[in-house]
Each structure stands twice: as C-alpha cells, then as structure tokens.
Image 1: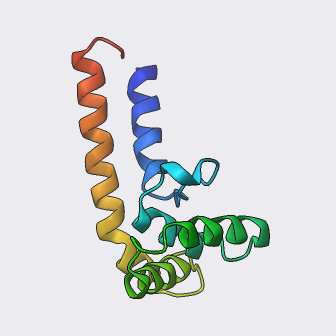
Image 2: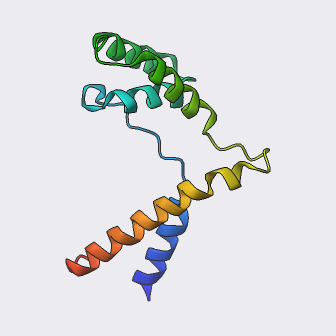
Length: 114
C-alpha cells in the first residue's frame, strides 16, 4: 500500500515540476541543452555568463539562430499561474513525463527494485 501511494504521489508531482537543466557540468551538455539552459537561467547572472562562455567555446558547432529560438522558448516555458491557458499548453509535456515515469516504474518493478 505504501509503495502504491509513493508511486502515485511521485507521478502526480513529476508532471507539475519544471525540471531545469543541470548547469554544474556545462561541458557535458549538448548544444541544444546549453541553449535551453541559457533561457532557464536568464535571471542568474553568474550561470548565464558561464553558459555563454561555453557556447562561445563551441562557436563553430552551435547554430546560433536555433540557439536563440531554444533560449526564448525556455524563457517563456516557465510556469505562469496567472495565464489561464498555461495548463493547456503544458498538458502534452506533462502527459509525456507521466508516460516516461510509468515506464520507469514498470522497469524498476520488473528488476525487483520496488
């Protein structure tokens, strides 16, 4: 019973949480992840400068137009509870995350981890 409650609560929360791209090891991120992280961290000057330095070091391999589009998309993707249409726009993303979580729990159960 406790396992089922834990599973359901995890699934419910995972669809509602905005998972930011980790910025502790920028060299391990793909170019697309870097550009998205730039938009997600636009309010943090130190992180923004670190990401820009990493993008600059990859100058020849980063499509700057695509990078700008990803950055702007990530900036506007944050939760906006004042916008009544925000939940509708995020529903497909939340459904996909829930599907991945269910698959992960099925695999863990098959492996005997839960």
